[in-house]
Length: 319
Image (cartoon, rainbow, N blue to C red; front, side):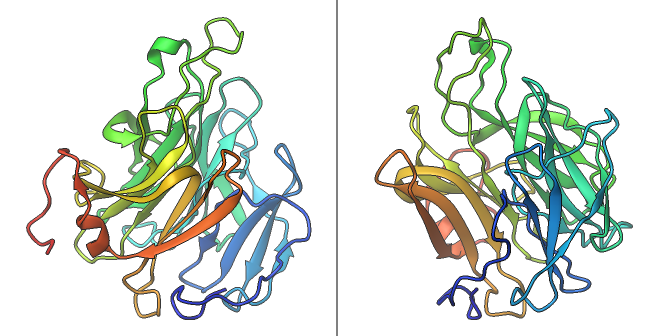
């Protein structure tokens, strides 16, 4: 835990002695509670919430009620970006976080959302694209939700695009529509190979990415993190910035040159020691095993002094 915006860190706090926390922490900004999802083992597995009411000092275990989706499938919490508290529109106060469905070759992304501070959760409709997982969600000023997703299944090698898949919600994450692929954002390195399963693409496929929105009033500044390399290796952890809610991504900056795997992004909160800071955590190291966890702290000015991508233009208010 850090009490000074990430400049220094205190001793480790153990939340659960056993279990898998694959992302998906949510802060209820109405109550101040912090919720962490933990599963007993790799899914399918029981899902628990550990709740803190004292800024992470202590934690209490809960068994939440999570409804199945319209396909009668149980959502899993393993490997996803953090959840969010909706701030805009009629559904202000809703908690939502990415989830996913396993159980067959394809699977799909989804989300779970709660309107009672995390006691019970409903499941969204499936993400419009099958073979997806490890998603991330942000809210824009107009209340729309932007959902990015790793894609891990392809019918054949020729359609294994490297571009990031995304979709939108206009009803607080209950349904997802208008699925497209980004013009510029990568979905992580892909090995264009075949592991003996006919035409099914089963090689090295994409990578969990980080996504966050900066708390800048009147602006939809989004940040995205992933490996930025033409090779098949997971390396060169990079952060991209969008100033129009994900329509274009005109600038990027390299954070780490070496081997780089799964990442997560978070933005500081106004009125705290974290205000103005951006936080990136990712797996990495000198070896392919990504044996280390790295933490990087920077601000928006550092990113905009990176490399122009040619995808859109920098806004005039950026100095």
